[in-house]
Length: 168
Image (cartoon, rainbow, N blue to C red; front, side, top):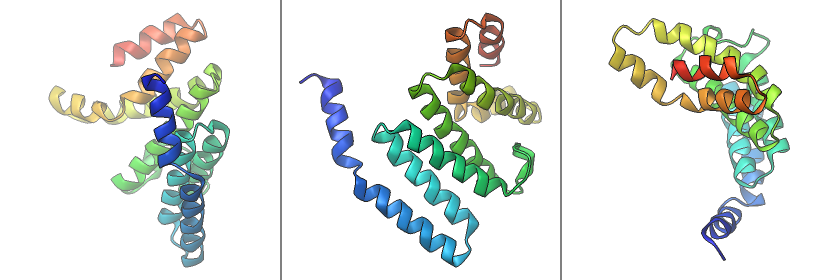
């Protein structure tokens, strides 16, 4: 057994159907209590576990449900949220959805999902004054940039690849 097989087996042991069921039970409790943010967190927990279990289609659906619940009909953008916590939930949902699309190798969908978010992030990043703070701002969000760069490369969109990597 090589190291990747061992890692895969450990993942299956650590992230089981029980954890998916627990996330769904948590979501049901949050829905019953009318706690929208906790419903979103439960959807994201479910998506995280499903990604770990290598079930990308289900993870994409769970992360989309999280986005729909979080946005509550608002236009998808960082400016749709009043708090930093909500913005982080939004970015986490986008990230999980991008991971699921990467597993499916749907390059066009990755670009369609993440490119507008990167544009939005760049607008926020420009509001940060010092280069050091801009770098720190970007540090936790590079996965989205990397996803677009890889998808652009695989789709043969070299202009987008260069444009995205220059932002990093």
